Amino acid sequence: MNSTNSTSPPPLNTPISAGSSGNSTNSTNVPMPFPPAPAPTDAGTNGNSSNSTTIFDVRSFGAVGDGVSDDTEAFKSAWVSACQGGSGVLLVPQGCSFKIRSAIFTGPCQSGIVFQVDGIVMPPDGPDSWPQNNNRRQWLVFYRADGMTLQGGGLIDGKGEKWWDLPCKPHKGKNGATSPGPCDSPVALRFFMSSNLTVRGLRIQNSPQFHVRFDNCKNVTIDSIVITSPALSPNTDGIHVENTETVGIYNSVISNGDDCISIGAGSLNIDIQNVTCGPSHGISIGSLGKQNSRACVTNITVRNAVIKHSDNGLRIKTWQGGLGSVSSVTFDNIRMDTVRNPIIIDQYYCLSKPCANQTTAVYISDISYTNIQGTYDVRSPPIHFGCSDSVPCTNITITEVELLPSQGGAILKDRIKHILTNNNTIDKLLG
Figure 1 (cartoon, rainbow, N blue to C red):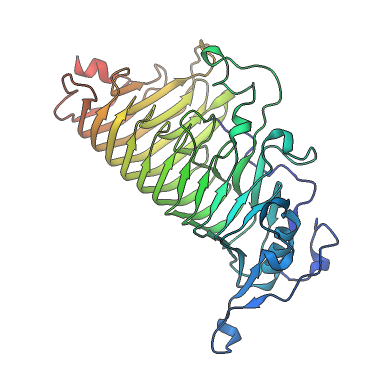
Figure 2 (cartoon, rainbow, N blue to C red; figure 1 turned 180 degrees about the horizontal axis):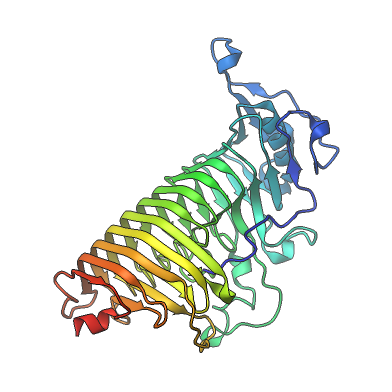
């Protein structure tokens, strides 16, 4: 999935800002007046306030939770109070459905805040219900929310069906053709310029576009989440990271209509383990280098993953004319189940073929594939390295790979052990 405008959050009309001092007179861009904040609930024990956690239930701030009323302002007020109060839990209670318009929740907060989603959170239903003065490229945004934990057993429902049916979407036209017209669609959850983040335990479904996206973040842990949308839902990447470092994605299940996990430019130290993808477009690095841009990605590890019924498995995709590099990437112990293009490097990535040949490319080196087992969709070769003639892939290591056709036929190779040091494709290597 391609990504744009990642460097700063598009503004909303009423962003929410809470200064770390706790003094509302020193905050900026705070919409006023807020409804009077009720006394929060103290969930501490033994009367020891130093060990207490304050609960900020959104219903105490005026949220109705009937799935019809607009609860946006109640969530904004609860956020500001929790953010300024320190060591608080913003509670979205079980058994309620809360409708929220597009909003930015801004820190920094006094200390790490827990955003506990046990109920259902949903946006307005489709483009026609989206307020005209609200940004259409994002729904729930967390900006400078250092130390925040977003967790719970509830559901974040993006209600993306009507967005997917816009005539501009590629699945609507014949042979992927699109029609003119507005096409902006909101990302469900977006994190900007935040550090020490945790997202865990949530279910996220049917985002109009990406489900979860991180831009310019650091020290992120994503654990035990479930992301679902239909296989033909366009541009619904599960998790996207860009200009972000030190990310762990663990123990999660993702099925969607685009990349299960996509890793964009400026990403480093990304660790992915025990993830199940599919149906999806697999785990992708890129696309990188579009419009002759520079992109660097390094130190990426994917281990103990399952990819099933997907258009791609492990993919690195770069545009001709780009600059930069992809290096130090490890794919280890991956199970494929009926995957088209299980292993693919494409330095000729292009969405409007034919693209003009160019002599520069994002340099790809030190890529390791170990213990990749399973079955592939026979419509495409199981391994394809489309490497640049002018900037070829180097030091590509393939060890213990065993891929069988999903519908009979001979296996690719019993074991493949080879190191590519030039631009040979796998087809040339196997003769």
